[in-house]
Image (tube, rainbow, N blue to C red; front, side, top):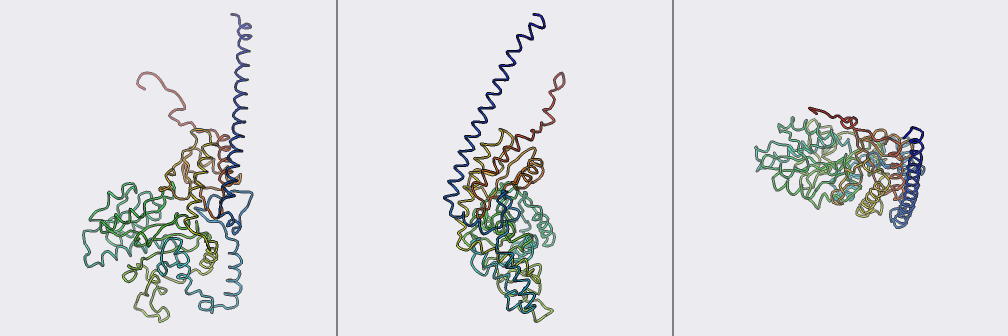
Length: 455
């Protein structure tokens, strides 16, 4: 066949291919519009039935964006600026130093601790607020070792501190330092294998309730019970669970726990953390950081330290009043809210978001790292994505605020007090659009096909 004839014959075939491709695109667009309409309607119905929907009005939020980073920094409650203005202008400006007594500044760490207590399932008098999470992890781990060593039946063979090998780095750094200070050996353990690692040498276990990368929820009751049966004590890090789900510290016999207040408790950037010391341990709690605030008579200025009673032993120095009272005001949004209701909405939100991601994201571009099982899920969704840095940067530019954990994790936090189902649908739809626009990265190993002898 001559070249003109071949070209003539190929033209109809090419035209047919083009028409078929155009038809497929139209069909996909029609299908996507139908899916979008269905999911938008479902989101509206879920929001209409949401008993927490009205809480959103208690926060300062930009309706032009979707804020899904409350697992890193919670949104600003509307009442906080006015409260801080009063603290600065009236309490500090007019009352001055009298506010330590007249303004209740001195007792703020215990008072605010008692307000956090119901949110983590603790009775009154067991939580003190102050210092950072890092400092409180140090106090808790060292004090736990000392509690164990002080037992009359103390076993000198107990020379290991087990730490969650996937923990937030600071916890690992501090656990290593605590091990050096107390003469113990640090043993990093995959949390999936933690129960099998417990034994007669285990002194203390430091575990995260929810993994900061994946959103995986670990079995607090089961691990606590197993550790106690092995003769060890447990310190729980509640940074990604406090304010997001029921914890049950007292019910499950937890020994010590720490948590931050700037995530799901919305205390503000750098707001003080909290330390839980179970009542049964308080009399023997021996802080590695005794300060004048934890002295039984702080203003006696006694050179010899005598620890105060109760959770006050967890205090160290002068509290950061501005940040502490901002947190106290932020906790007002919890009045009348049960954590169980928050948990139910959290699971419904993350379920719906994952449903929307499956509908909108191009196949194979993202993989959920967050467990599907409700019993194993915190209040965030983590998606593995090869192009995660570029994807998150683009999402944020479009008003969907999540965050990135390098190299390839997209994190989306769901704070039920102010995140709605329409937010979840909008965020997933934006993610699908961004993934469509950003080319998939071709792995180097498969970019070029290599054949031949020896390959």
